[in-house]
Image (cartoon, rainbow over all chains, first blue to last red; front, top):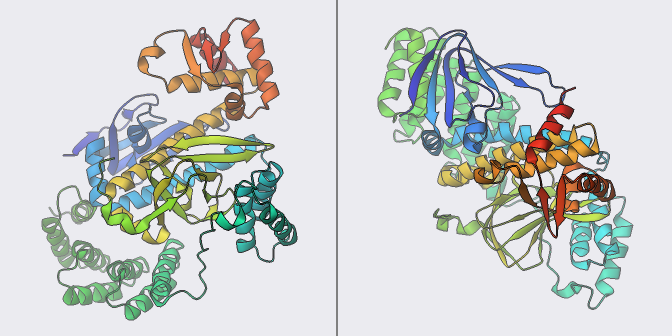
Length: 328
Length: 212
């Protein structure tokens, strides 16, 4: 079981360089992470948001802490061991998704920094790059990868600036009877997934995915439109459940609390055994709270708490929300 | 990996030995989990084709494509007959929900790559070639077992090409530095191995260079 631990103001949860397998979530209070910028050696201070994890990378990656966790005001954190954290993620894939987003972003930025230090020409665009790869392999008489690169080039850039040269190379390679890999037996390029003219079903999944992407761009109105269209085209579709949920969330973020309540109430009536029921109820509670109907809100939160397993994100949120109401 | 992957059979893709799985600079929208066979990750740097990594069953590659579509930063080539599971943005959520263990593995892959890149960045920001090469020694020694860490002398399985690649130097520049260290009797070259006489010496050297 994850433990709830209280820290006094001006204490330290961990120091840079410490080895530990603990992962934390800030429940209340103020914690700041102090690290050294690898670029200029200056101190960086980052505030941990309530509900945010910290200490994840060093614990999972088994390397020393890269930052010091400094407690600014009396704070409450929940402490997970690595196995407990893994359990949490297994039951809440969404947490993992969010973390992957954060980490992939960090990695992308690091890649960029490293490349700029290695004075690799950042100017090379993907089109030129792909053509150059083909040319490199061609000149080194590695015809199989050359063939692959030129074919890919022509698939992606049929009217590209190297189209003529790439075609010439291709013709040359295909003439070599024993050129590493004769054209006939060479690997056929996989079909390029094009958004144009997709099958009925995948066009609808595209609706859903575009909806998600609108959501992440904070274009909630557009997101709602997409999800609604998806649901009306696929009442039994693969993403129906998710779409329902996303619409409700978007309405909540847009502060359309009445619409949000109407949406989720309707859904609960329609799908009383929906797997995301606790989350629906949580949003009902949050919406009621936003409308100042605290009693109703508390009712919803309590229901969520009784429905969820310990350690689930939804339960935690409901508990926190209930606590914020001053109830228990 | 003792994870039940049978329900992911529909994502299975096979490649013949020598097949290109994807090519550097190609737009990427999927990532792969190796089920059998080995995959070579190569990158063309200047005039050389550089093997960046060799991956084994259970390992993940192409992971940068999961959340953002961007050109591939390296090529992936099948060394053996290779079977992979191919995932993209579309079925990624199915994967996350259906197989949290893989999702966890993915998270760990990212964490490892972030650490490696940071370490690399630290090497590249050192002011001179000698300090850079020395820091690569330190990095390589960090991945060795704790047992050998306690000793001054350590043996690294590496060569000049690899070292040059890590510190962003040309092979000839790197060779110069290595020769310099050899004449100072700080290191010895044995075939594919490099014997570091006193790794703590190099640690102090790098530390002194890092502080401005």
